Structures are given as C-alpha cells and as structure tokens.
Length: 203
Image (cartoon, rainbow, N blue to C red):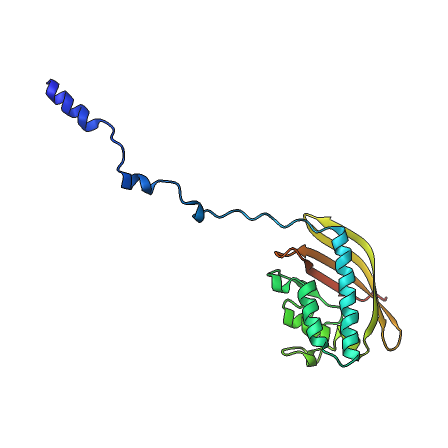
C-alpha cells in the first residue's frame, strides 16, 4: 500500500513546465510593443492670428505674381499646402464665397481651381472659377481681417468675422464674412480644416 501511495504522489506532484513551453507564455519583446502617440497640443489664439496674417499675405503675393506675369500657380499651390490641411490627412470643409455649381471643395485640386481659376488648373471648373486669389484678373492689394470671435475649443481653434479685400487695379473694397476652423497637423503646423465664406446678406 505504501508503495502505491508513493507512486500516486509522484504522478500528481506539480512539475515545472518545460523551457520550450515557458517561452511561449513569456512577455513579448519590447520591439513589438507600440508606444501610444500623444495628442497634438492645442491650437493657441496667437497661432490663429498668425495664420490669418499668412493667409492674407498669400493672397496678396499670388495676386502680385499674377499681375507681373510670374509663376502664381506654384505660389498658390505652396500656400494651399501651408494653410489648408488637405495634404496632412485632414478632412477639409471648404465652402468658398463665389461657388454655386460646385459649392464645396473637398480636395486640393478643387480648392486650387477656385483660387487660381479653372482655366489655369487641370481638372478645374473653368465655367465657374475665375480665380479668387487673383480677383478674376484684377488682383488684390490688401487683405484685412476683422475678427468678431476667436476661441479655442477642445484643442481646435475657431474664428468668425469679416475680411476686407482691396482691388489692386480699381481700389474697390469688398467685404466678405467668414467662419474658419484651425487644427494642428501631425507636423505641428496649424492649418484650416474649416473655411466658410459668404457675402453679407442684402435684403
């Protein structure tokens, strides 16, 4: 009887797992563990003001290049990349002032058509877009922002107000209302993800 008990004890006694089995349940190597990415820092109000300055400067520069028969297309493309989030993987909501048949511009190509003119850009809309950034060939000499509200909500920047565009050839001042949304890209640059413009209502 004692021999049988000793045999049973031996069979039921806990044995360590083989080394090959232990390796299967070991913690994964650190090279397989991804480090969580931190969210981008919030947009600041000074950055909104800076973006507005750069946006106005871009419009004036594009107009000047156009009026001097220089490469305004490349300048507009560079400005669009710097000021709008199209190329940063951001979904951009852009409702231009003078757009009817294609009122929203969800792609960089459609935005470029609006700014430089559909006849000046491949796959543009020549029957509708006459180049807002070049004022349909007259150019702009100045752009002035007059903010009604500037705020930051959940890290995103917002601004609403009017901007005044001065015609480079006739001196006429055109007033346009805007609502804009600003978001920090993965490269740290603040760009537009929302841009709605319209002319003031006239009853």
